[in-house]
Length: 407
Ligand code: AMP
Ligand code: MG
Image (cartoon, rainbow, N blue to C red; front, side, top):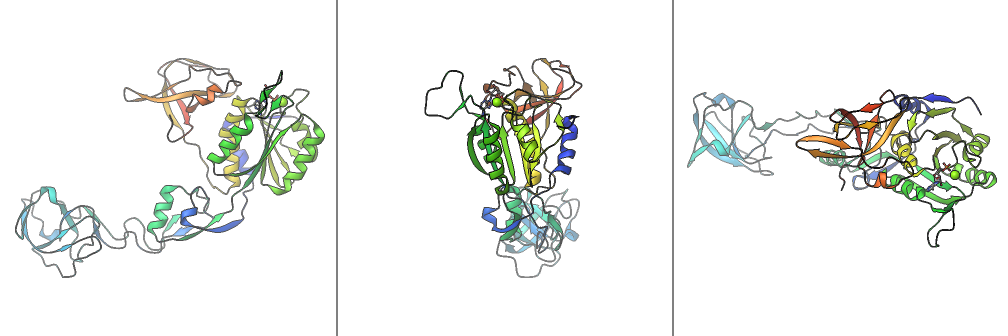
């Protein structure tokens, strides 16, 4: 195998952007089915948004030419409700009663909210300090007809879906979902249903992988557990590779005598000479078998999850066609001091919370990579850069939350 190249964590995403060639097969879907899919077309606004001047408040609409700084009185000549516009014309000195979302008469450009108005029959008194053009959503202020609204390569979430719905877009061209096959390797791994034999453990990585892939909306094929045997590894990999876009394995990529996955993939495909200077997760292997991408996660359960969340997910997002995948990051003050080894980017597991109005993170739980409780009780990774060795309480650190909502 080629000499290994050490890659710093901050260089791994640009490297993956060169390594991964996105899958470009497209399909049509209706808007209701488009969430978590990746847009394969640019979307241009079919009309001006808003398409008519409308009111942002319940109140009265009129022309700003009528405004007097000391206050003024106008005559109410009609009303405009959402969906039922005022159809008459509006002269100076006149106003119409208007509701939120209702169309403004052509001559009106200002709305005053009802809370500050005094009405006596059709005499409407406007106070001082009313400003021209306030409380109006003007035609085309968000998009003009033909403006670019969303770019191909956008991962569609509820915010995009509502925008597309407001434009009346019923069907979309999206990239086909990628398919990922995975299996665990290790003679010590057992499936459920039987008591554990001496020296054996239940296979947890296959379940965490399945769950993480589901969280990304990725279709998968679970190939079960494979023993530490080069022939069966080779056979399985060669059989599945042409049928999927990526293969993810766990275990067997380290330097032990039973670590065969890396060797086998290098024989039937290619293994990149890189290793990423992160902890946990240094053994993570990147490769290709034919046109299929290969990601060999370390067997250590926490390392498998860290490498998936921080590196493999980014690669899969690129493969799905997302142009600019990004992982949300925030800053938080550490509750208790943190120690780490210099020379690697470390992802400690922590709990992020609010305390006295500040965002605080605590990494006081176990950091052992074999301890699954460290992932289950955490809600974020604390990203500690390569050069850092210690962080004192109260210092700011970068934090990557796992979920939008957590318990
Ligand atoms: P390996 O990377 O194969 O050397 O495995 C490193 C450690 O992770 C060992 O303690 C393995 O027993 C454990 N391990 C490997 N695969 C799994 C798995 N699928 N589920 C749980 N633990 C695993
Ligand atoms: Mg193993």
